[in-house]
Image (cartoon, rainbow, N blue to C red; front, side, top):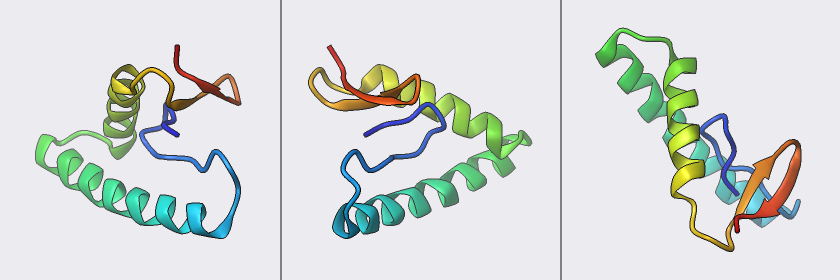
Length: 74
């Protein structure tokens, strides 16, 4: 599921899900670093902007992390 920090989290903790999340997050981390460098801003700022957009764009019925709990987006 999507998180406000710009990265995915595993809704169900299992090795396959964790491996997929790690691969996607590694790619996101690299892209965020590239964008931060191009725009002379902190990586944390890019992560926050990406997280906000990801939460907004998440389709209804998919999971988001809200106040420390995984919930299905209405």
